[in-house]
Length: 68
Length: 469
View 1 (cartoon, each protein chain N blue to C red):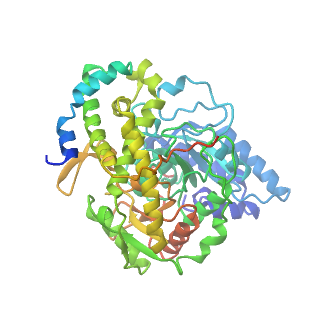
View 2: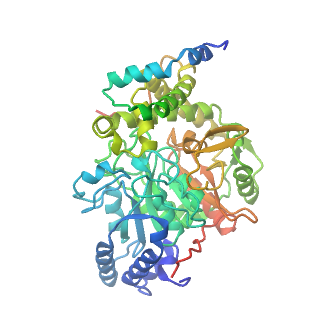
């Protein structure tokens, strides 16, 4: 738990986040679905930490596609 | 049945029909009989189009009689049910989409198939909204593995894998966002091509994750993949992500084989978290190619993680209204993933998309040193249907998302891949190996696949199904 990523993992309250975001996104997460939704959110947060913790040059742009 | 016309590779069927040694109608009637005899137990088809097939076959025979040269003359095929087929509701594996009206026109690639003389037998089963690696579907039932119907076909193009491996059709069109062509190719023992991102139009198909969606064919021969790729290329304004590139002539190139190519086996990430058969298959292919070189794909784990984040967030945003209005009508396994994806902070997704740009450059550097990379397609043989968890390197993990751990980092940056089927000594199930090439060089991967097929190192035999007629 010494790295910033590990600290973030420990502090991420997936249940609280899910409850808040369900309201923000107007989603009906029924009680019997909540445990699985939270488990997926924990997995996604772990994956996201790998992306957000990687140092990138400021000029690396997102790889999305748009041609005006 | 072993001599039945429709059981031959697609290129042989087309050659026979073009030479008028065989009629497209005879091939089609044979395929229809096979589907009626075997599909009840395997669950491949969700929308049969037999009247259309017979009409298309008669048109092909008439055009051939007038001298037309059609590269896929009389070839029976299926499409994953996310392709629009005129007059058929595009289910995309869902219950919700069944309320939509039938498609008013064919998907762009279906139009290309028709123009090339292929004959459409119907739309096939898939994991709901393509968010799947198993071939299981809560609404339509599972598409089963013809080599062992107690096991998964692999997803999400499961019906494509089932229909081709069972011999119901010669080829199928599927989609691949994180592995959905390569996984069923591995589990069902087929050749599968995921072309370069942007190579083939996705016009008039139902999306999963637009940043990562690809379309491509599954077949029982590498040459068939080349013929199909040549037939499917074409510019279509209906796909804003299609990249305007000169078409390649894969059929002309494939005969060159692997001569002169610098081939290496991926180590590191691609030699961990798998059952022994995954590595044995790669080693068997490497041996057949006399390859001993290895190459390290740095940050593959981060590429996989980033693809995971983009997929869940983007697909959830796409389905947001359906999640709000009809959450109970989703397949539960898919719904819960989509609900969680709708809660992903934007910065996570942007970071993943920025890493995607970095990883593309890193892989370009790797391809300065090698021309082709070999890696496992799946971490194991087809799993028993209903498997929920797997244990890899001593760690128990959910089966469903981890079937694609080796495919996901590669499609993340759109590299072309041919999955080839390996039958290890004594094995009752196949397993796939990925042949990975630089962007826009499908021809290199196909050349290697064709050499392996000619040497007998890889093969896609039709499954011996119990009800085969």
